[in-house]
Length: 83
Image (tube, rainbow, N blue to C red; front, side):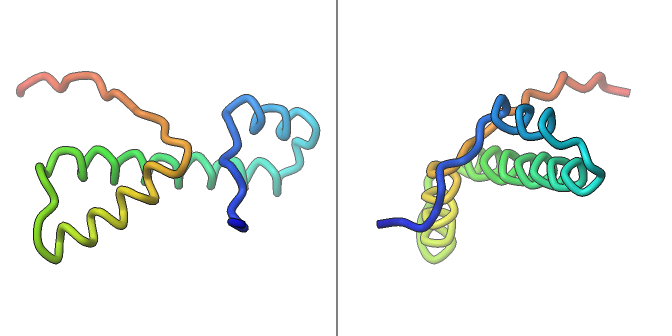
């Protein structure tokens, strides 16, 4: 049996904030958002690198298992305009 809980949804996080809007809770919710953004960036990078091979592939496969096991927010950035 895994000790890891299922990830909280955005709706659940909003409910938590609604029940307790103390500065500590707000700080924790911002940290959750920051960490989810890091995970989304890692996911995007991993998907852009092609097939995982060799030792780097083993590390990427381990990362992929963790990314696929958690809640992932796919963030789409607007296209940048050439200067």
